[in-house]
Picture: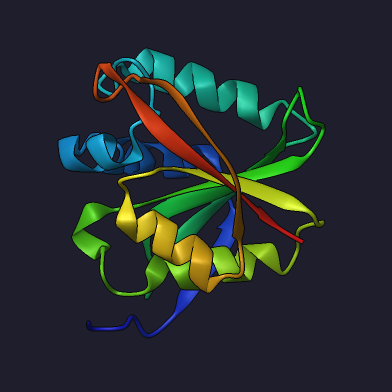
Length: 161
């Protein structure tokens, strides 16, 4: 694994969206994330989604940069049902295996309230590993339809106290 030199976070801005859109188009990344937009290539839906996020007080969205280059995002929102903060992250597949997700999420968690939850497809070993390294523990499993796969799969819910 070739580790990056510097991983930083900044508040996501409109100027980041072109690169974030490009990153989330990757078919393999969508398959691994599983619970994605119905059509990742729909730029209008992507922009509308981000416009809604920018307007919400309960969302903290950050752009992940590695050595000055945008490589992904990490965000937190408050789950409407549980009223618990939940995080998500997405790293450019070209950067997988470099420890960027672990470093970025660790940085992000330093500014987040606890407890915080996260979810991952049960067969997404990389995300399950990242969350485990960061101290998240499994608190539940359920099955749901993964839009990126067009089938029902198992999802693991994690919590960090």
